Image (tube, one colour):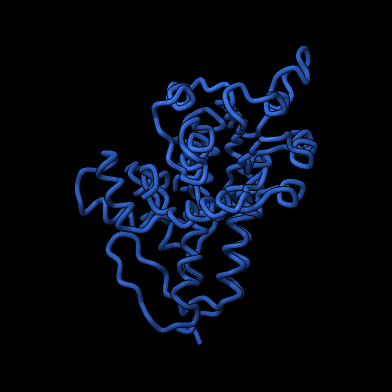
Length: 352
């Protein structure tokens, strides 16, 4: 466990080796599920690289030098961290270049080009890189192609499919694995997300290795919705019109804020996607049944491989459409209608 971060020692070793051989790149793209520690890792890596006392390849900040003290206080002059502003679903251009009155005088691209004030490096972390616009990514191109001496850029996202080609072609991708179940269980209890060990076990198993997802599933409304939704994602039980009504009500319960409703709908899409992914891992066409008291999986032998994969792809496409500001009600209906078409092509063995 490096710097109190669970589950990513292999990534730590990769950076140690790169630093030992003087092969640290100028830009990295951290990819992996949300809520597994990518942003925390990026920050601790920045702290270690900016430390004035320890050698970089040690990756162990001293916590005593001026750089470490300023970093801990949150006002290090050689570090810039940006992410989605509250209430926004895209990273605005102003974060990179400043507003119209201060264009190219402030912002991440301006700051990272300045000479370091304390040491030999500047570090810029771009969280929520899934939400870069074409304009904001274009303004990063020069920085990525011709990085200033000593500058390190770290972008944090979730998957390759949500990154723009201009970003993928100019960064080194570092993949982070989901957290293991026993790690998730300990973190859930330690962070007081839940206190009962049995419930921590259930959430850890359903979280997909994401502490963020586990915390969301701890919400009784979401847990109840999951119990009702997943058993219906079956070719022999699927009724899109009934699901539209129930899921619309669930999404609207998030309140009047569009972003809150958008996050609720994203959770629905992610849960469905994880559901189909689990079916594929079980082995489509297998005769086995999965006994689960909480949220039983559909019978894998009701799915052929093409149907399960197509359903997963449709969930991922719907997430991308949601990020592009598609009308939520229309998106929900179209997504369920498309699943209905996919399931209609699957004949249940019981019916033959």
